[in-house]
Image (cartoon, rainbow, N blue to C red; front, side, top):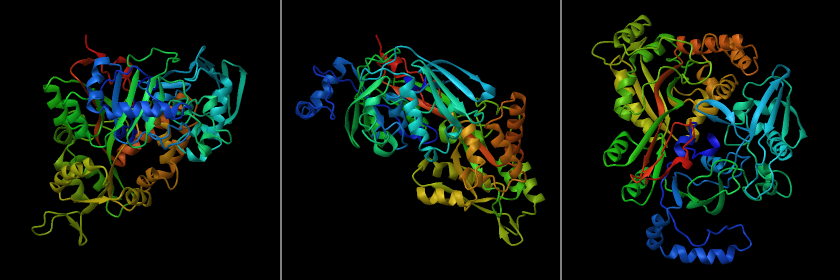
Length: 560
């Protein structure tokens, strides 16, 4: 369940942010809390511990009570109502009404719910006996306070369609929460499965004035498995097991997230026996994974619902030609990419959406690798070889397409080189253009590109948040589709999916959307993003199968 695990994040950037590594730490006294009144005395205590250096590390695995995880970036201030912290860390501390597990909406702080009034009323029955980490009670009033605080800043959460649909919130009693909507909203339950912002902060966590979005939190108090005990920016965050947690508590007493940007550094520490676990979907290479597996480390892998796609600018001067886009579909050898880039650990994909995303598996026949077909399509559009040229031309113009990519995502360069080689075989010159992150996104939104590599969001975002973005004028996802012959009608159908309550009509809508993407060759699906996990050989229970963002820390234990 998403709130009961170690998030390897995602959506795209979530899965870049978490790789776990760790040790254990036997302490006779509990770790300090910087925010506590006794902070100064405890800081002195901890300074002595830190000075012990390697002695502390040596004692770590004797107690076996701490799991230390690698974070590629600082976890942030853990404000649950903003987008500034790492989602996996927010997930450790906070919970929501519902969660997502294996693609299904499941109970979390709400044990059950009903939808009535044609999809305009959601009644949640809250779990009894739930307490925040400070011992205060979770009830419908504090749930209402959190939701209303987020609603006041709905403009900052354009991906949450429900915020503009909730008309009022009622609390008939402490265990019942009723959301009244102005119109049906199919994404509402999905929206509550995110690690932010529709999660529950305890009363004492709200600032004295205003709300967390504007004024920050007084303290990160949640109902999740872990409680923040100590935080040093850009170094580490130490969490303690929440003894008030309503569910099954983790076997470890402490969880430490250490900022280690380089995955090879983390791997070296794991090989040296100084760390416990690392989980990632983008940084762990096939070579690293297989080498450590052969060396006796425990491993696990699980596909996510995020798909790596080549996005083609349908309004581009060259890529606006449907035959060029279709030729790129046929000229892409996805199996070669799967093997060459990922050693087969990321399987070849067949469509923009994962087949696990509701309504999107409509039985389409995927494009297959066929150079002959690609050549035929290009020739039909007048793209021919002139003289001894290896690049096709038409009307004096070379068949050149720019692939832009975020220079901070180094794997996209490697993937671009493979695509460049494959397209050269059919006379397409692919120019690989690295760009600064900000410039890259600006050019994407402005349509200043030929193709680009980007993964579908997957997880809770699919399918509704994605459709909302694609149907919004000016959004970068909308820009990719701008040259589609049926774009205006497609936008109407995508928006209808957000509130359509007729199941048959909803299925019809999705079939139209997915077939449009396919027939207009908007996306070239490449590989299925896969989570990879590596454990110490003396640990057991690593399980990555729970879902897009989850790693069940509670299941990881020392082998007997």
